Amino acid sequence: MIVGPGREGAAFTDGGDGDVGKDLEARRAVSSSLGISPEWATVRQVHGSRVFEANSPGALGEGDALWTTEPGLPLAILTADCLGVVLHARGAVGVAHAGWRGAAAGVVAALRGAMTAGGASPHRASIGPGIRACCFEVGDEVAGIFPGRVAATSWGTTSVDLVAAVRDQLDDVKVWSVGRCTFHDDGMFSHRRERTESRMAAIGWLP
Image 1 (cartoon, rainbow, N blue to C red):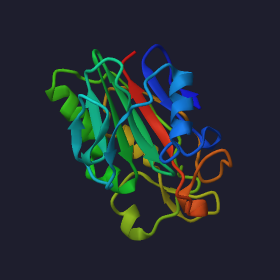
Image 2 (cartoon, one colour):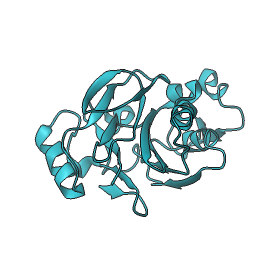
Image 3 (cartoon, rainbow, N blue to C red):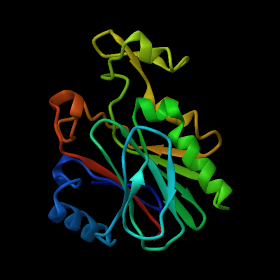
């Protein structure tokens, strides 16, 4: 597990923490080590940009981001190549699920906008592990969605830098990134590498 910087509540699980998407014991163990409730607020992820405000734990509906002003309420999204992003504001926290479809739909900008409209303008972002430009091979149709963020894989084919694409939606927000690639790091779950159904989590909470 990787814990974000400072006193703000952000953490990202890895393969060693187990499948926190389905394994309740793994979720309880992660929660215990972080000192948070094992009852998380989540969404049914659909690779879009819908944002929910959470007031209690449980699944809120189909969407890819959620935020809260409730102290002690953990928010979580699940990943296995997509980026988990935690936004921190004074008195609020939000999380977003950002694969290429979500990034193209502006999910992180939508979360930031929802929090700001609610009186909680984010000042810091923590970006979790995900498939990096070194391994994220894409076709021209995907590359064309991200002008200026087209890169190359370590084997020389076209890729997209999703981390940079997410940073573009954060403007002057201070960003911290885990910097680990789920595809080539054996300690991570990667759907693209092994078609796994296991999931890691990006978790945000108000300490």
